[in-house]
Amino acid sequence: MHVGEMGLLEFLDVGDASFSIPLFQRPYTWGEWQCTVLWQDVMKAAQLGSPHFFGVIFYRMDEDGISLIDGQQRTVTSLLLLSVLAEHLREAAGSKAEIAAAAARISAVSVQGVRSRTSEEDRKVLNRAFFEERMRDERFDAEAFWEGLQRFQIVAASLDTADDEQAIFESFNGKGVPLVAADMVRNYLLLAESPEEQARLYQVYWEPIQGLFGDDPGSLRLNNALRAWTVIRCKAPKAQSDALCFDDFKQFVQNEYDGTKEDLMDEMLSFCKVWAENYRYHAVKSFRSTDWAKVGRKTLVSGRPVKHASKESRAFYAKHYGVDSKEAR
Image 1 (cartoon, helix red, strand yellow):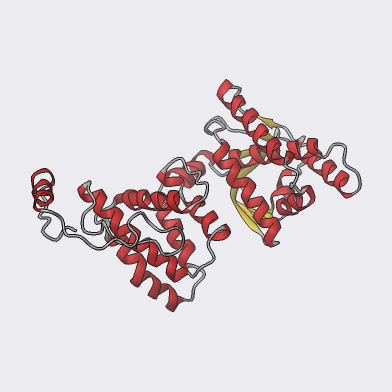
Image 2: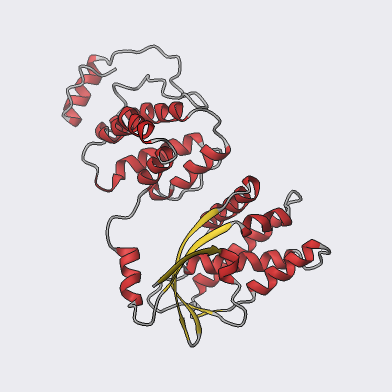
């Protein structure tokens, strides 16, 4: 196996060669949510002028071209995006004409073996329409967008003929415990800090957050809480499941939030206290009047005084949930 970092456009610009999709690959499934994240990442790379890591692509060279062992979704969608960009700039002059020619040349690379199911074709049509609509916006800057695409980096892993592509695909996608939203949020918050600060933030905030949900295989309950928090905090959350809420979280932190990391984690801890109690007892109790909001809009209970639960409420909790709610508020 030969592994190296390279630009996405460099990888896609294969001239007369073509990409092929092995039969064991899943169908093309990317939809509006993934296209939205891709679009935002390109715009962010252009705005910041910094590299953007677009993942690892496994491939093998064969007589028919380049066999994509893993990376079909990103490759097909990127070629689709470049095709729309080329059409958008077809009548352009000057530097934009050069961009249009480059985008057209790369997007002309064919992808063989993509299944011709109606659902897949529909997805590609819808994704094209999504990109076309974004480029019709009068604020769209094609040159800046191209600059963002040029900053997309991948790790390209070329397999030797002796490598077992099916075994590698299964190992990369199906074995071990994949990162979930909670893992990625934790890493995003901690990795940029010094070892000492990582340890402090973890002990003060993240460890208590995890502890609120007890035995939580796969962080399912914590993922659920994080998605609920992003729904409240993000202007336009896109995640269609708990597992996909990390991108909403990242977009909020990068585009909307301008406070400290400590305040952010403090709010997440306070919110998770409320959410964990609801998750456990299916009713708001001890933290009902907690003013957990610190980094944005206030909560509906902000400013309300703490109020003890009534005798009737305690009896209800004890009867239906087996909970001694004397401490309920």
